[in-house]
Length: 266
Image 1 (cartoon, rainbow, N blue to C red):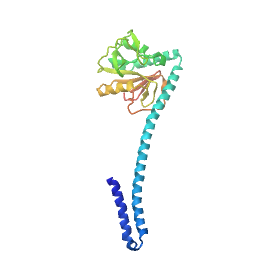
Image 2 (cartoon, helix red, strand yellow; image 1 turned 135 degrees about the vertical axis):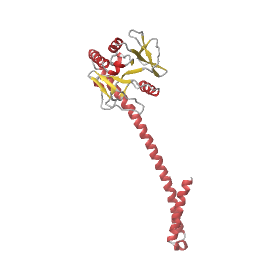
Image 3 (tube, one colour; image 1 turned 180 degrees about the vertical axis):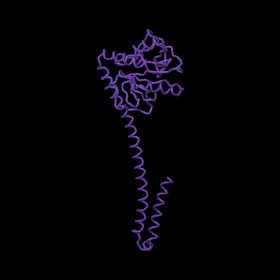
């Protein structure tokens, strides 16, 4: 209100300036003169209202752009998930098995894995044609590594002990989990092997859209725990760019059947 009165006052000053320049009109012009002064005042009020309207318009447009961007990323991710699941499922089973074995051989030769004591790896969902970690379970068990698997508890991932041959159950989202989950301290976690649907050269990945791994990795970082983050994928899952949200956590590397792509310094 004070700002509006100030702008009206400015119009009054313009009126006063008009009187000062044309003093004779105040005596002889009569109604025409006061009509001109009234126009100055109305101009001041109208300019205020127009500016406020434009300010509101640009605020709304900015908010809409932000909303469109967020919605656009979500749509892009959903479309990419559909494409990549279909592409992965199009691979014959024998090809996926051969690729998974090649990936396991590369992973077990990595210095980070050789030095590691505790390694978390996912148990694959066969229906989604994920890279199988069965060869890795065999190899890492032979290397005497402590194996952990992700378990969903209260909408968050935690790490549970896993040994080859443990009884499994199919959990809420179709992922295999130990029938009896023994959750352990993650402070000594050295490596995390992560499933993905697509990845790019910046180390960003997309999963199934629940955000479990992003929250998991963020929580570990907040607790001062920094395991080496390795995505497991077939090389055909690489794309030019993954649509990324601010909360998406990048990987340190991705292993596919031809080798490793590192995103952080070795």
